[in-house]
Length: 177
Image (cartoon, rainbow, N blue to C red):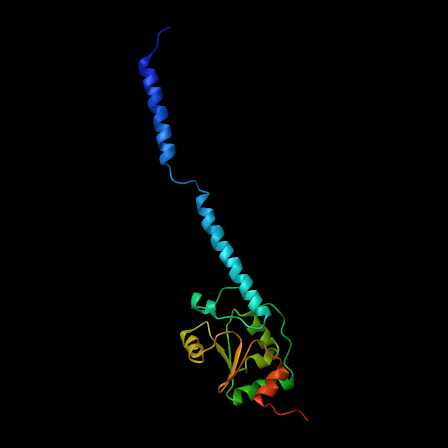
């Protein structure tokens, strides 16, 4: 039997080359999804916290720093009922009284607060958007708003979704005849 030493060496070198390239190769592609899963878990926990805060009637302004341009996010699709005369009168009274309503476009509790006034009265509210423009953001910082929605009248404030009756009592809205 004739042994070709050159063929054996060549085969051995090829095997070593394959082993060298496989050990020096970059980490498997499964290493990256772990980071994505971590971000996904962080995102889900943030959403959970936001939903819990919304359920309690207040939302913290932590996202105001994260998205300075506003926009994006889920749009509210709930049908808003037309405003009654009393809802319109209350929104006008709040504006005339110098009361400010601070909120954010992404805040579910703020959306709920607005819908209590009905479709037409929403545009009459003394609303300050805390998360779309620098001017509004600065107004919220100056007013020391810590959660949304926040109603401010002088040194008095209400935090969280307020019923229309509570806003009437707090603002001194005249009783209907």
